[in-house]
Length: 195
Image (cartoon, rainbow, N blue to C red; front, side, top):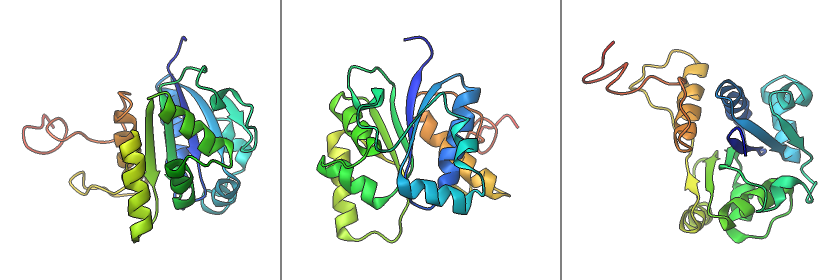
């Protein structure tokens, strides 16, 4: 397969910066990225990041239209390490949980689950009601990892970038990808650190 290959999905929840940061980090790590952005995700990117979709898309190796159900990432025969959805809207979560998919983003996530590959969902919503929690339980039972981007303050973040980097760094850790996005407890900060 060559370079490690990861699918990145960006849905319409607030937090497009998580997907943007992940794409930049994955490029630095030499990971081949396959990007799909939901229709709502495109709107959120324009509003929150103030960049063109083409600028964000340039960070990925391959970009798919959200409605391209025949794309490579819609098939289990296309090998990947898995998929990161950053951010993951509640609608996207619910589609994945139900297995009833309406776009390439949720189809690709469904394929990752059926192939028993790693699926990490950076769910962005608060507060949660019982339906949200049930969807999270359901995808977890199916093999996904629900990882809301909750900031850690033991790193003493100073900027929004520090907070975002910590969450994205921890998400990439779940794929076994080395990254320097966040200080490490016991290494650069905290008890036993070498700082």
